[in-house]
Image (cartoon, rainbow, N blue to C red):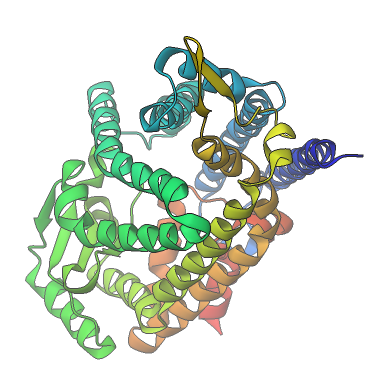
Length: 428
């Protein structure tokens, strides 16, 4: 049994395990939510109406049905790109049209991304203009959707193409440690994007106006001073142009940090509740959650690039995934140099790694939920617990978050604890 066959077998088994687990979890979630749709949980019977509870259940079920289609599409695309030879065909077609070189490799990656985006577009539109529209959350017009799409594509090309070129160049010219230099480039790029996001990227999509409520600004400033947090300013984002969902967050890096409130949030919460929500966000800062997650991300990226550096030198990695490496092209009577596999290796790696990393999702989800509990605890030290509980209850209700998720689904996927768990801790 050769290595190429083992690679093919490994991909098939991983895909089946992935597909089976995702569908099983989605089915459990849908069944559990449907079974508890008829009655509000006792802990919420005096604060949540039956209509609101059933809306949240129906919204969850609608998203769950769409998730099943998304899972199936992802699996079909993976098989099509690899075992059915889609990526190999695309690579050969572009080689025939363009010849070998950096432009061909860039075109291969861009074509791959474009085809994947087009195939996933119908489900994305159904989510926005179907599910979100039906439950009253979508506020986006077709014109705004198209504008966002064009801006997103242009921004992706402006920021992504130079980075992609640099990574491919390092793979070809960086020697045996190219993956280390690529990692440095990715870290610098990520920090740079975080730094420019508040003033350059985000204003392309949303309007940010200074917070006008002087009383709230004063209260927020006092909270931030106690936490040792400094920001460039307080801003309100016109999130209501796109969605009725609400949020508050910190954005930026270093001196570019901003505090941002959705305009929908200001309408939904009282000043005391707003202060509690911001105290929760400050809890993430105080416990250095963002820095910890960034450090983990950087370490995982380094290990992943090191693995890619090794796999890109293994012929069986390509052949086992349906791709013929090192194609020799001829120009006239002269044989050209062997075609570089760098873009192919990158794309194959991007296809396979999520299959394996999916099974460690519960670990990252568990850590994220722990961070949320820590941020809640910090908020309750700074503001009355009842204000945070009241704010969270409103947010869960206004965002139609189900109060009865499947416990196993929660353990696997939820980055935030369910409302019942968070509110129970606030009541003690």
